[in-house]
Length: 384
Image (cartoon, rainbow, N blue to C red; front, side, top):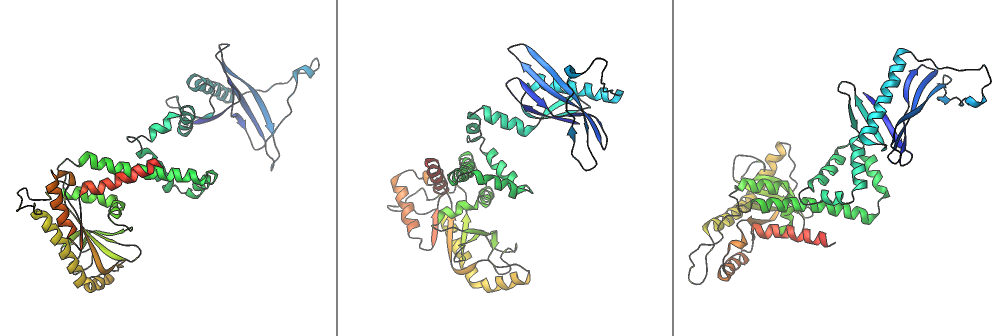
């Protein structure tokens, strides 16, 4: 595969990198192409120079001073003889330069040529940079809701590069405000992606596991329930007696912890379609649905189990080489279930509020309330 670098000099002229025709340890003969594409004069083609270079053993290549034909005396002459192979290299180079002109005019870039198929390929990074520089609206299109995952992929690619320190050092030229804006864009991308998952699936009969997986991949959403941050310790945590990640007993959907106090948080997940209340009122209020009462009782039972058996869990985990990075002081309990917008009237809304406000040790929050917090974050970032 041959590669030619093109450097644009003016509107219609660009210089190409040298095409090596002959090279030894001390001598080199190259063709230096110049690409011309002047639409106003209907001129397009390649001109150039054949240059002979010579150097010492430890020296760099030094170009000979050009011999001026006008200074030659009568009877003097000079020649550069090309072998069959060197002539073919010259013809191939001219053909490749003409292909560049035909496909890309005189744009600065790096061009690759595949001998088998005679296909020209422009450096993809140069293509992207050229598009971005010529189309001001292209970046806005990339940040559109439907395409904003592309920006996140760019940052994922950066994080996986071996020379990440060199890449990050390039950001030194950015102002603090610029970096804050970039950070906000990445945050918005993540928030909007999660919100779109909710909007696309909230009316579908998805399983509890589906919503568990969504929240597992985006555990930062769970922090929106509290006024302090939380960190995920274990999904489907065992709280029945052995190690906390043992698969043989009662499983709370999420075991989290406050990163500062280390106190644990137990979260039980149901479905958005879960009924919050019984349809038939009891006297003046609608009682909580059996499934909601069951979920609240379940998470409270997990709390009691964790409190009574934490010593055994710590001991068993230690034997298995697992560190317990949380405390069991007074675990917080959360149930995420149902949708607030499923309540049809003020009586139902009042009934639900009365019930959950009396749950002193359990936070009961609906899915639409949880994702509305995500929407509020989006609104806040977009305003800034």
